[in-house]
Image (tube, rainbow, N blue to C red; front, side, top):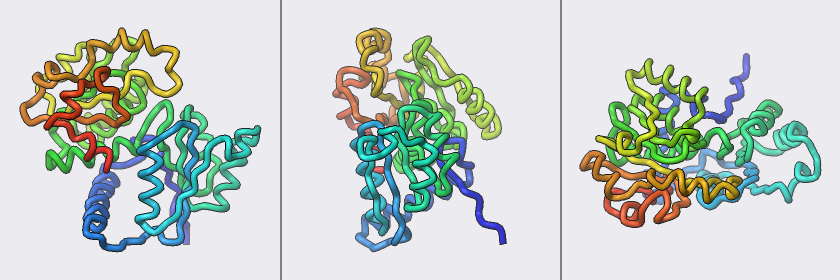
Amino acid sequence: MSSKPLKHFLQFKDLSRDELEYLFERTRLIKKKFKSYEKYWPLEDRTLVMIFEKASTRTRVSFEVGMTQLGGHAIFLSPKDMQIGRGETVADTAKVLSRYVDVIMYRAFKHEITLDLAQNSSVPVINALDDLEHPCQISADLQTIIEHKGKLEGLKLTYVGDGNNVCNSLMLGAALTGMDFVAGCPKGYQPNPDLTNKAREIARKNRSTISIVEDPKLAAKDADVLYTDVWVSMGEEDEAAQRERVFKPYQINSDLLSLSRDDSIVLHCMPAHRGMEISAEVIDGERSVVFDEAEN
């Protein structure tokens, strides 16, 4: 009997549409059980190790609490807690941890290191953010849109701001689920071109479109969902002044929101900087669903 092939979740394109729909179905079931205080422990006696090169609030708490609520156990490790911080290779670390735990979650600075870890692991590896993608975040985002819109296919999802890891995964998620996606990003800060081409290839199969524009107003027009992220990610602090100048016209505020549909919703993966990428009146307004998003 052949064993089931090892499956990692490193990029959003690692999921098929059927797998994604199954994920949303399971999410609704698990969330309903949790809200009803119904014990549900499918991960009993399972252990997740969480490796964080970057600091986190939502990612760490959601993974750790999630494992606890599903009956499992989570272990937190930072580079200072590990021999990898003293020169042990990523390959050796992956091989050793695979003997101890059932799943490895990695929040990394570089996607190449995420790949290296996965290639040397004999247990599933989950990408909890690197410089290329943030697939777990987008899974939660799409679930939030379903809860508020009742569907994904046929909606227009607009991302405004820095074409970063979140934008890359969001673009792929939209393509996979049949959403029309528009990224409004300044020149030089647009999403990864290889992933853009991949997203367009996927979108064609699902009869949706992927567009990259520089004009944030054009991007926001008739959007069902408006999404943004911070202008300065961790590790880019030395570029802060320049980025703030470049992205100033890309703030989601009441003027930009007025160009979207009357029943549009606003998402932000947080942490948010009110008065920068999003105005306080929008993120705290009635169309904002950012705290539902954070919960998911």
